[in-house]
View 1 (spheres, helix red, strand yellow):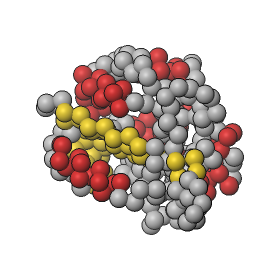
View 2: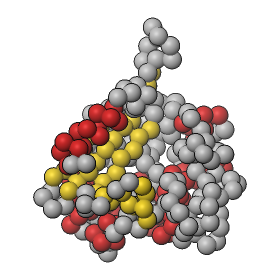
View 3: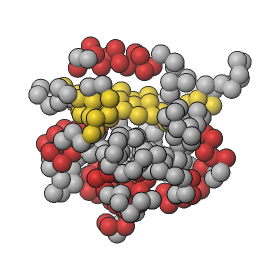
Length: 255
């Protein structure tokens, strides 16, 4: 990694660091199937996110730091490792005590897939061929969440989190302006803040997904309208899911 990369670059997806799962079809490292990354390292070993470093540490950068927006999960993996280092706590403990707790997110956290907890949904993948059974996503994602995602949440807790982001109720010393100030254009009507995306009209939030998981969360600060969609399937399983969600977002929050 270039010594010129800063925390700002990592937070705003402008570090230029090559991703361990490249989603841009125009870049050499593009992968269509997220599950392919586990050909190099068994997913069950990724309980400390430092285990992901060999997947991208030696890849050439996609651009110099600070020059352009390039979404990078790898950058947030590094942020998670950095957080653990500076806080002196495991990543999940640091986020739970300094973010989830203060935001009132009592039903959210980072349980491992092989731990038994009540009310935790299983992610599902479509059959490999017609007539075969549906599958769970247990072999498709790493078993414990980290800097680039993987928290287990409820819709109500996501609403609490977005409200806390707007009101300054997460992480002592971090203001709403720190998170919600647009840092770089991401395309269309959207810019990147720190950890969230901000629309030109002030609506902010984050969407994302993994195999067997799909989520959208948005909040309109002017009236507090919040939209949260959580699904334990992805767009491969339900091909119309993104279009349906966009229509829903347009109906509730405007396009």
